[in-house]
Image 1: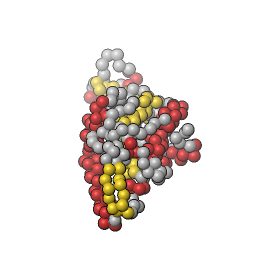
Image 2 (image 1 turned 135 degrees about the vertical axis):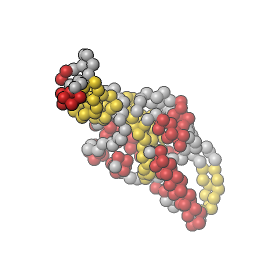
Image 3 (image 1 turned 120 degrees about the vertical axis):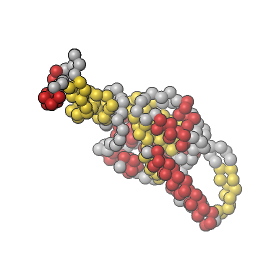
Image 4 (image 1 turned 90 degrees about the vertical axis):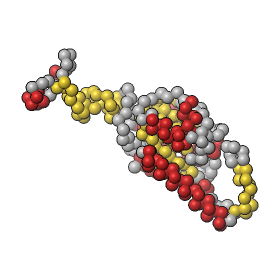
Length: 284
């Protein structure tokens, strides 16, 4: 079954990720690289050495300094885009289901990235990395991506930093997009710091169900933690719901402030938001 329908693909076809750091991919693409090559955008000079191409000598610089200099240009390279998809049990909740919405978002980001000739790596994780799939590099590879994501399911607890430490890192400087509900038992902050250490431009997408953002509950209830199996009995009241709302908003505010300090892009998305609007919220 297709994760994204043709109508959604048409809506996101003209969108693209805005990446702020130079990247270090190996294949030709549309992103600025630290490598010096022969594209049309000027980068720097260096002094001529025997064997250099005479056509790249800057004769104006020679006239000023009486030395031969070679023009260097910023090469255009593909950006490695790493999509980290939270597949822990807490994601299998809500109406619309958070995990299905997350899969649609992962597929949409993959689609627009492939249109920009970026390379895609998809990593479902809980307390460990399930696998890292990729690289996917061509527009035609989106069919493979769509089929792959449609087969994902949820399981286990979540620990983002442990998952990252156990994975085999396949890329250098690039982009990392984390899609999660933020209900991570351990390791979310440490994981973000690790990705910064890996020279990643990070997008943290907190995806929540409408029931979690604004619960509509009443009476005596037993609340169960889907990942740990722990339960608690509560009697819902207006005061308790107000306390939940205050605590929930503070939790999201804390995440936002830490992301601001670390230079991490952060967005909160409800699972009932159309996927094209989710993508626009991330890239603008």
